[in-house]
Image 1 (spheres, rainbow, N blue to C red):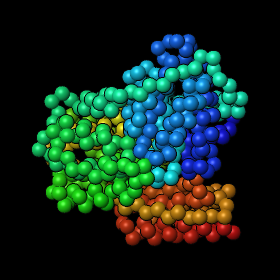
Image 2 (image 1 turned 180 degrees about the vertical axis):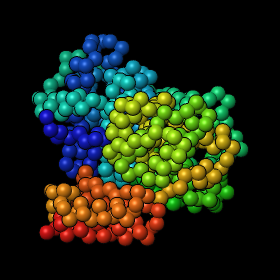
Image 3 (image 1 turned 60 degrees about the vertical axis):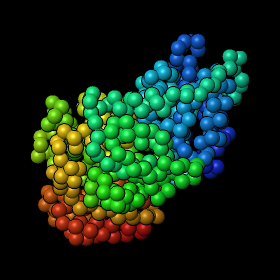
Length: 450
């Protein structure tokens, strides 16, 4: 069965356009209530509820009410969490033994967008078949259940999640003496992250903690970290931490204001596990992970594999290999021995454990890994069919790989949402990488527009 609504990361789009409307959310809530209710046995069991959380977008109020109405109409009780990070909903779904958790968020996108993501009772993403069943149920007529659900607000949700984050560090762990700039992107971590780091002893300088419904991710957070980088230098801080709008991604800046991305953070966490926690079984990256990251892990005999871009694929490969660590260069990091999904706050704490245990600054630790120059060209095409299989394109790629001489790589990847092919080249010399990427892109453009 083909998908109508769900993508690899839930449902997402521009508010009021396409499927992202209040009417759609009402029908989605009803369909989800019917499908997930049938999976849980008796409605009067301890698993009758579904939790709803959201980020700070103004449209979240509208969509929360529509989903709540649909779920209640389907006979499901609803626990309202209010503004909470995406990973917090995964955790709280497990904690309250709920049937499922629903997140209203478009993550790092601007406020005009919104979306929906589901977690199952274990705090993991719904199986594909359940998503397809929900899609099918949306075509059913919506009738009022004779056994309507009820709604209540979970007042201590934030406090529970704060304690969960702090408990991901060992007893006695302290950030006392450390000055941290914290950028919460005017998003869902605005009332969570500052408390976590202050309660662990850090001196915290906050940015992006005044959401107004329209400023989420606006020139701040992990997608726009320059403000955080500058503040680290201005404040004389030890480091900076930036989250995205829904709190599942994190990037750092070192004491010099230099950005530390997801690959570098993963390397630091893996290196810490190998030296202090009894070993690191392996790390999953993506097709876009820096080749220098792969080489640095190889030097330390830590296994590494690449998954397709997307946290779903990273987690699938982690589970297949029995590994506990994986993520993306964007800062979406999964520490599966601490939680079930990417969690910016917990990932940040794991990196800070490494800084503490190694007794070195963040810039010293990241210096143990050499990032290779990586250059990408987005080629917009009239058509993409057959381009990657074209002999001219294959020849251009082969020639570039020969010039790199096993000290770099070439990747051609079609965009999942636009008529683009992304040409990425990675190697030891920036000028060579840029030249090879431009050369391949010219061939791709000629073939795809002919």
